[in-house]
View 1 (cartoon, helix red, strand yellow):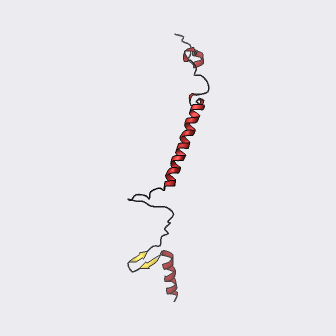
View 2 (cartoon, helix red, strand yellow):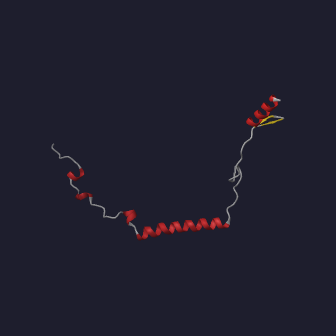
View 3 (tube, helix red, strand yellow):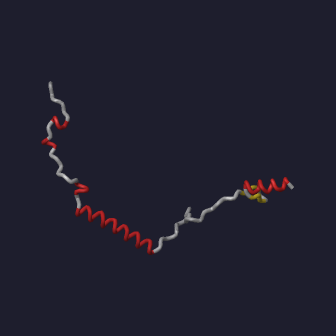
Length: 97
């Protein structure tokens, strides 16, 4: 009887014993769509409209702020004239030749 219990315990630990041999139990999660070598299911109309609306709002936000606040791209101050910089400001040593 102990051999039978041990065999049942061993069977439960490693998996199910089938006629063809040992078959392991695997957990399969059905939480997402797998589309290997096939097309995924098409998006709903609401998803397509929502994506276009969110994309349009994003581009409106970007272009609105580029037009009304160009300093974010071009800078807040005028670009200095490099011709007015001295050698000392640029860190160039004196020419003692």
